[in-house]
Every structure is written in structure tokens, then in C-alpha cells.
Length: 534
Image 1 (cartoon, rainbow, N blue to C red):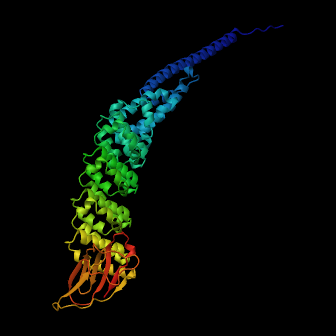
Image 2: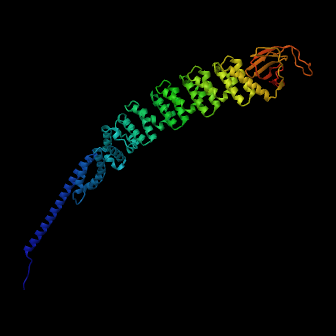
Image 3: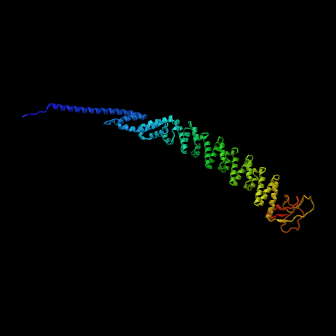
């Protein structure tokens, strides 16, 4: 019987293979562990360096470090650096895009994106870098190259986040550039706000004079005119007078006469000696609203300006006359003649007053006014008014006007014409009132063939006016008979031969004659009927 046994050789070989396998596995494990450790150390180093670059805003270098981490193979991400690198890379990529614009000279867009980047909470690691970049833009780039509608809309963020370095140095210039942008866009409110900020907070900055001139054509500044009067801006010597003048001009262009008047009046009242005052005065003269304020202006410092009130009155009078507003036109021209009789416009005012129908209605008042001292005004006015009343067949007023000429200006050039017109008017009135007939006088004695003498005796207790209208015109007066009386019931058959006698030498011919009472003892002219004859 045979017996088998295992071979020691095979047992040795099996043990050796196991040892080799274990060694190989250990080697692989050690290799993996070593690589993992290497990867960890390398990733950590790259991440830390990338983070340092990132914190300094060097995103191009940081991205290279992060890419080294992300491109490496690892079995296990010890420390989570791959995830962290991905996150930081996601932050750096958009920031680097902004930096690329910055470095390419696209400053306006870069500034806007830096500001928005700072506002993004997830980008806090790069916030300081973005702030530094913003600061470098303000320090190195001209404000006009930074200002755009988008960047200017972020002015409040720049202020609240203190993003502008040395605000007293760099902010005013940027505000001014933004104001110019808004002016181009006709965004008057925003541009005005920025100019106002410069003038109130940075009044000593080099750009302040430009900011003072900039709002002069800004409608928003005009709307704030009253409020500005009580601000530090009003202390600038030229700002308020210039703004008032320019706003007045702007309102005048819009036919907003009330606001235009308010602006120019303010300039003249508060800055009467400013270089723009003369221009404001001329503008006020062309403003219809000034005519409505004529009385009020007389009591202001504006009225003290040489030529202003006479010029205003003359222009307003002309305007009212064109509108057929004779009452107001009269008031304007009357003012010149009473208050500025020696002004160069007085002659024009006198002519205008003579052509004004209202002047005839004011005749009684004008007689006692200062303007009545003008040598030609009252006789000319009286004569013209007499003509006007004649045309209207208002004989009583016509007679009153012509009488004024003869009684007060007997030597005036119009006196002869006034006498003829008076005779004509008296005759027409007598006809209209149904005056009694006087028989033709009987011839008595002889005179030169070229002269006729008419003798009239007044045996009445009233003064008589005797009018001769024919080859020549005469208007004569005959005194009352002091010893004569009026009979109320029955008088004598013949008038007594007493009373003043008038002898009037006339050229031969046929005359219309009117005899009427000038005044009566009972002051009742209507009870005495005029007489007329041929």
C-alpha cells in the first residue's frame, strides 16, 4: 500500500507569491498615498499661492494656480482644494475680464463693473482688490473718461461705499463730468444736483467755477431759484445774478412772462450794479408782465435806473395802443409827461397822448396836471378834441374845447382855426336847439366899401356872445347891461335904449349870426334861447 505526501516546494512557492502580492499591494498603496500626499501638498501650495494672487487682484496668476489644481488627478481630494479652487476661479474669471477692460483703456465700462463687483456679496475676497482698482482709475484716468450714464448712475454707491479716494480731490471733477453727461441727456434734475453738490460741499475746488457756470442754462436750477437764494451758493458773487438773468431769458423764450419778470426783477433789485443788470433791464422792458407791474415798479430801486421808467412807460403805452386799450395807454404816456417831462421820449409820449381818445375824456384833469405846462400839448389836445366832438355832433363839448384854446392860449398857432371852429360849432348848436330868428339889421350910415360896421346893443342883464360866420369869422362878447332886468310877466313894448354897445367892423358879405347868453344871473342857461339870423 502506497502513501502520498505534499511537496514542500509548492508550499514555499505559494508563500512567496503571497508575500510578493502583499508587497506589491503595499507598494501601490504607498505610491498612491505618496501621490495623494504630494497632490495634497501641491494643491495646498497652489491654492495658497492662488489665494494670495487673488487677494492682490492678480487673477491671471491666480487662475493659473487654480487651473493646476483642477487639472491634476487625485483619488481623494484631501483638504477640498479642488472645490475651493473651482470656487475661487469662478470669482477670478469675471474679475479678470474687468481687469482686461481696465488695462485695454475701456475705463467707463471697467468702472461700472468694478462697482457692481464690490456690491456682489459673493466676491468679498476680491472686494478690496476691486476697491483698489476703482481708486487707481480715479487717480490715473481723467474724469471725462470715466463718466458715462451707467457710471454716473452709481454716484450714490461710490459715496456710500467710500469708493472714491481722497473725495475732496477726485470727487468734484467726476461729479462735474457726470453733470455734463446728464446735460447732454437733458436729465436736468440729476445734473443740477451734482453741480449743487460741488458748489455746497466743494466750493473751493478748482472745478467749482465751471460748476457755477454749468447750471445757468439748466431748467431745474431755475425751478430752484427761490430755494437757492438762502444757500451758500448764493454767496458766490456772480451766481445768482447770472442765474436770474439766464432763467429770465429762458422763460421769455417760452413766453412765460410772469416767471421771466420774476427773474429779471430779482436781478435788478438785488444786484443793481452787476454787469448783467443792464441786460436784465432791457429784458424787463420787453416783458408784457412789466407793464402790469408798472405802478409797483415805481416804488422799487429799479425805478432809480436812468431811463428805465420812461422807457418802460413808452413801450407799454405803445403796446396798449396797439391793443386799443386806450385807458392803459393813456396812463403810460401821462406818466412820462408828468414825471419825466425833459426825457427824450417825452415828445413821442406827447404825440401818442394827443392821438388817444381817452385824453379828451381826461381834459379837465389834464388842465391841472404838470404836463399842462408843455406849450403845445393843451391847445393841440383841445383843438383835436373839439374836432372829434364836432364829428360826433357833440356841440357842447366841441365848444368847450375850442373855448379852452381861445381863453388859455390866444396866441397859439391854432387860435385862428379854433375861433372858426368855435363859430361853426355855436352855429350848429343853435340850429340843433331851434334858436329863434333875428331879423337882418337895417342899414344906417356909410362906411368904406370894403368895411361893414355892425352895431349891437346889449339891453339884457346877461353877457352875450355874438358869432359872425361868413367872409370872415368873428366870435365876440358883449358885457351885460347892469341896469337892465328880466320881465317875468309883461314887459314894455320896446326895449329901453340902454346897455353896452358893440361895434364890429367886418368884410362885406352874407353872414350867419348867432347871439347867445354866456352867463345869466340865475345861472340857468337852458331858460335862455339863442337867436340866429343872416
